[in-house]
Length: 135
Image 1 (cartoon, helix red, strand yellow):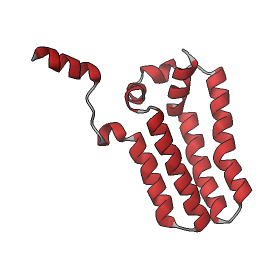
Image 2: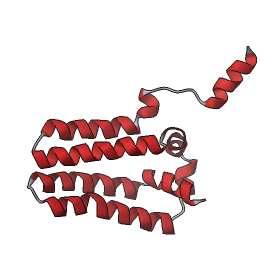
Image 3: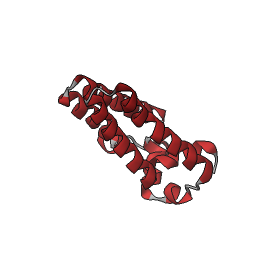
Image 4: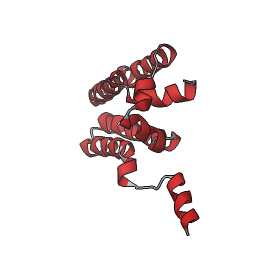
């Protein structure tokens, strides 16, 4: 498995998901308390360190072969990563400025980014080609 695939599939490993969720909410809480440096460190250092460790040492063939792995391969490109990052930044800003609605909005953006394949249905390019060939 190459580095690009590992980078993609490590995102759905339970250890990575739990780390990201815990760090995001802990960082929002710290920022709510106006602890800027600890909040930023908690938001970014553990998830990046875990990602680095996992990508370098683990095999993600099980994740790749799963239904979620197939979904991620089709629907979670760089655009979805960017949108999820913007959602996290919104959550962090909401924590810093004490805006619950901004935290909720950021969380909604992250959730919708993960669910984009269900929310914004797109046909598989192979299906489109097959349909055109039948005409």
